[in-house]
Image 1 (tube, rainbow, N blue to C red):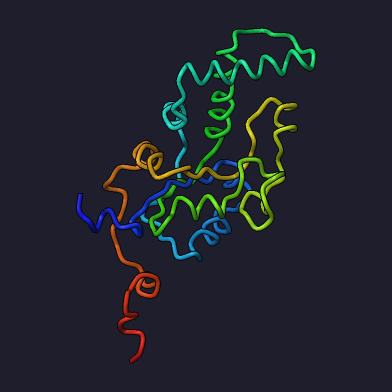
Image 2 (cartoon, rainbow, N blue to C red; image 1 turned 45 degrees about the vertical axis):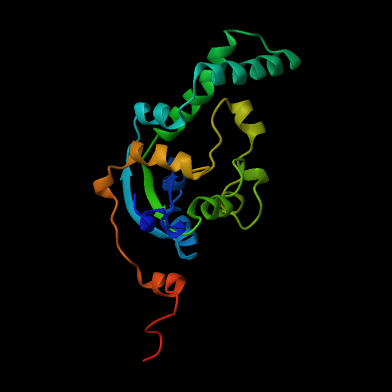
Length: 204
């Protein structure tokens, strides 16, 4: 790996506009918010996500399923709901609901490159729950779903968009959705302003 490939401006992150974002015609609005920071899209496609991609993407093990399921069991006990299956199955239901959500319609997946791309995208996207995500974020401005409503309806939160949590996750997630040949190395005009040390060529 070269020094150039390790440069912070080459950091990559995965973004997926989920079926609710596609069906609500928010693709352009979401991309605009991300692009105007100076981040660069190096690969993009619309596709129907598969169940296999979903389970591989969320990458949870039995320990995680059991822990999450135990919490669900406790909550059900507190509110007087019956316990109908093992804790691990309640944990797996979390991913099952995400699978049903993300495979319900087309998604738009893209890879973004740029300085601190993972953190910048996370900041712009906002918290996982739209109802509590700050104003100014994609989820806070463009959705109103809440965990309380999701729990009552027995479904995943419709929060428009997936973004990667950290650079290590990006390295894992991107190959699930893209072949390396689908990612294009190019220099955009705005990079001349963002990254050129001496602002060469600004004056005629």
